[in-house]
Length: 200
Image (cartoon, rainbow, N blue to C red; front, side):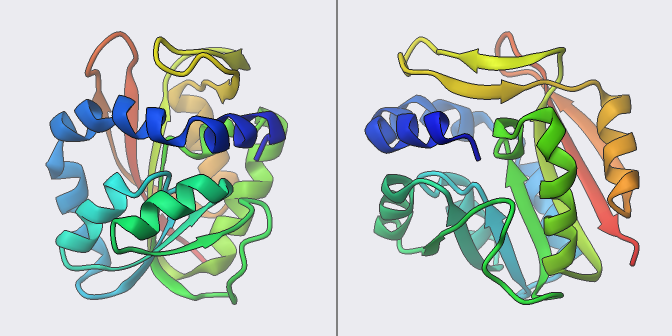
């Protein structure tokens, strides 16, 4: 993950946690329900880019055995404060054995990878997922990539935006089969919620 983005999250972890509270309050729980149903309870899942643990808490409450991973020390601390098992880790070198998890959840985490690096992150995701495991991916639709600031987070973070066709092609190249795609537009940005299955 981009070092400048990690620094921003370390410096403004609490502000980010407050900023996303509304988002997770209105998040379509049907996507979580579908993910949990496909993975099966109480299977072990990895939450990549877990941030302060808001979505990890929802997954845990839904009956999954959740391991949270984030590249920011401060985010890991906040996640642990929510009672979640949380570790510091790199998206490109996950500290787990092959075929460790029945499911992987990565919501608006991998959009912080440069487009040239996303295939590497998807390959690493595939590595730690069991055969026929389920991948829950959340990204933002759009074009381009670069540093952005938000109304609450006044320091730069790297964002990469994709079309649905781009994402489907990248997932196919990483040996994932897309099961479903649903758009979610809480405000100005359009999020795409994808469920995929590991083929090999």
